[in-house]
Image (tube, rainbow, N blue to C red; front, side):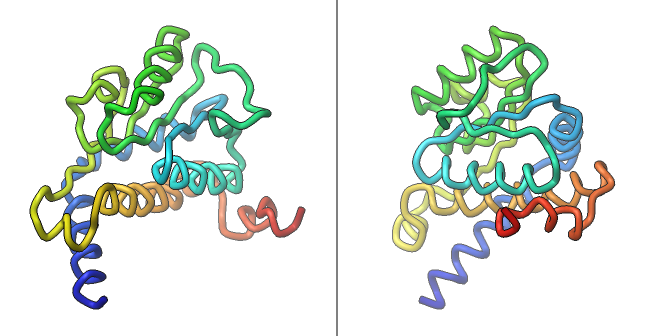
Length: 179
């Protein structure tokens, strides 16, 4: 257990260190100024996206998760953030292509900037992970990607808070436990 935990934490750190800070700044600025934000992902990537959507709502942003029954229509000027490790998941790629044609800004968080999703996006945060035997043994499938995505998006929260003049008390007022 300790070996696996140490491996995952180290690889998440390495993955995040590879991300260009200007990409993070561009994404934070785009999210902070978006009239509406839509988030999409499938499987565990979708669960990470839902967690980020909840935090953005607590910041006070207008956020929807694609696929929920109450999700409105994406329109020109909206922002759609799509999470996909491979960047080849058919529904993620189709979503990106459709909303981009509508005039939305597409941000992808993916393991491959050169994937179909990366190519269909306006902005790409590439989370490059190891592809070795140790990964297969200690962090199978998308474990490193999903953990890195979660940490990256949670790390953007304080940047968004500062940009939007929010603090923990203002987030707490929008937290679901008060509903």
